[in-house]
Image (cartoon, rainbow, N blue to C red; front, side, top):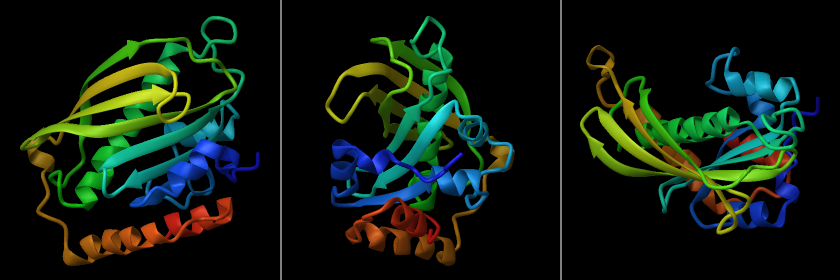
Length: 213
C-alpha cells in the first residue's frame, strides 16, 4: 500500500496543521516504514499494512497541549453493516490518549517511565461510518503523581459531529518509574517544537519533520 498520508488533502486538516504551535509527531509512512519509536508489532502498523486503516497522522499542539490523531478508515472495519465496530473506535481513543501521555513525558509534564491504560471509558454518541476520515483529540484532565487522567473526543472534523468520548487513566508502575529525562531528550523535543513555525506543504514534508524529533 501507499503509506504516504493523504489526510492533508482535507481542508480541515490543513487548517489544523497551520494552527500555531502544531507539530507533527507520527505519520502512516513513518509507522509502516519502521521509522518511529513504536515496535514493529504495533497494532496500528498492522491496521495500516492490512488496509483496515488507509491513513494516519498524529499532531501535537504545544500551546493547547492537545494531541490529535487523524485517521482514514477503510471499508472493512464494521460491526453493523457500513458502521465502524465500536472496538475500533475504542482503540483509536486509547491510542490517542497514549500519544498524549508520550508527548507530555517528552515535555516533562508527566513523570517518565512506561505508562499503561488501567481504566478506559468510552461513550458512543453516533455511528461512525466506515471509509471515513475522523479526528480524535486528547487533553490532560488531571495528574496525580504516577497517575494521569486524560480525556478524548472523536469527531468527523474539529468542531464537527461528535462520534464518541473517552476518559482514561494511565499509570506508571512504581518499579518502572524513571528519573527525569536528560537534557538531550528535552532539547530534542524543544527542537521539534521549534518546527511549529514551519508549515508542512506536502505529506513528505510532514514525514521529514516528524523524523526530526
